[in-house]
Length: 398
Image (cartoon, rainbow, N blue to C red):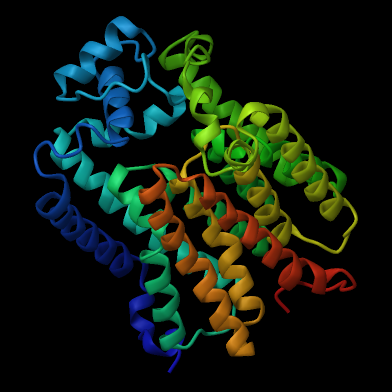
């Protein structure tokens, strides 16, 4: 039985689907409140930055004013003050308004329920994009199990991170491209700058490729979306951009991040910054060569490849950003899912290795070795996805 055969035809009614989603969301919210958030368990988690930012806007305050930000966090019950002002762009804080309208416990619970919903939605979109044939129920269940137990997923849940939404947006972008809706896909792509630190290399690499391949509709959509976010946020708080750019302290932890910067520190602590820069140049050059020497590649392959390079080279990222590696990981899985043992080995490496690096991180008080996870995914992505496409001129999912 396939997933398509397992769902009755009448369940495709949009009203029934919307009602089902609302019921699931309500139950998830209640479950998250009872099991995880409670009235004040998320007052010292990353979610507080989103929640306090949204609360400041609702009160007509400036979240980038330290005189506002620090007392507000303290009022909301936070004793952990990692930033002297809101660390997110204003357009990101606007997304938090519905959750900030609730008290902290229920706001966090609703956010976690929303996160699980978009994770599941993104997974379904990727399956439909990467493997448009009906997927057997057993394989669908396996993909779902591995997705929802992936280390980065659980870490993101524990912190109330925004990476679930990023994952969904990137999956939706690929789905729209496949359905030949390039302008709308571009608008969706522009929304990933709600957390810009994960896309330092991604934006120029993928942007230049889109220019080279003359994907004008996608570029126009991205420009429209970006301009819309800027204008909307500027109307809410004029001049916020210069205030936000004054956020300090993020690069102070670059040497202990699971990136090439962290690996450079492990190899050569005295000159880690220089070695890290060499690594960044090397990764950028490799990604550039792959993108521009393989003209048969499409957005389906190029976007995940640029994402892998960006997660390796960004000066500020943690393991919860690795949730985005599910995009290339699932594409690799579907690229050779009928190869039996090879597929099994790949699943073990991608989904078990992060738990191994977690054990090392707990014992070493450093998570820098988790940088080998995107490195492994990148190598496998090239070998199993990019390399077979080099001489093909048809659709990659054919």
